[in-house]
Length: 352
Image (spheres, rainbow, N blue to C red):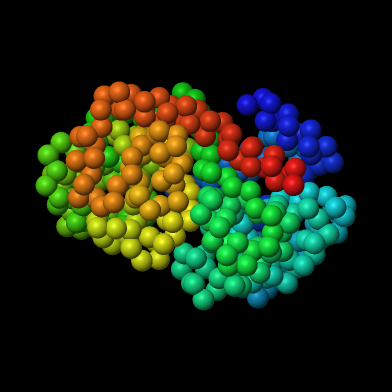
């Protein structure tokens, strides 16, 4: 780990300029139960702790959209004009106002600009805007993407920037934090109102497994015998989580991850995967997701085609295989908690 840190600092002797776009809600505590704020904050900490870094926060104004966009452009221009030509500049993408950002993006051609992708809203919600999003990403010299699948898809859709694959997001935690192990219990965490499959899942006739569900907005009508709602937790405090497995599944159906969210799973490294691994949970993932190869290669879980087969798949795991997965999760959890994956990806991006 020390070697990775030293490598980044050695490569970046001329300073990395970190333009960090922040929404004011983060300073009002509104993001404290939101995993996306955890992801961005962890990236900020890893970059600032491991690079010779000049941190340049740009806080979005709370005024009207039009006036706020003008202020955003003015603040960005003000920071960029003080950065030497050819310097390395780091961003977290998406920026708080992509429409305004498009106007100033051509200025980044002067720098070795690196963007870490958190989310691609066009692929998640608005397919008609894919070309527009690709055009924004092409403003950067190098883009750090989630997975090999995402890299191939962006390349196919016209991304010309260099790309580095992150593999999985880090999840910084105090080493002393542990969850309560609960055998044969599967954890699902996330936005519950969009996870419509949970209701049907709760009525499947499983005999030896049950579910603990965390998040906001659990729908009515779930079978309480099989599924317990455990409320919310702070992203930096996992001590209230109970389980043995973490489930990665999205959409309306137990048959497959369908719709836009299902298609999006074929590209992304969900931040909840990082949460599960940091908790020491073995992973259950849809076999067509972008993360299925990572989970199998690192021997940290299993893949499934449909949720009806969940108990059968778990029951067929040998004690030796189970022990191997426990050890694999323990190893990756240690790396994720210390920021290894971003350090490696950033080192490659700076080297390009």
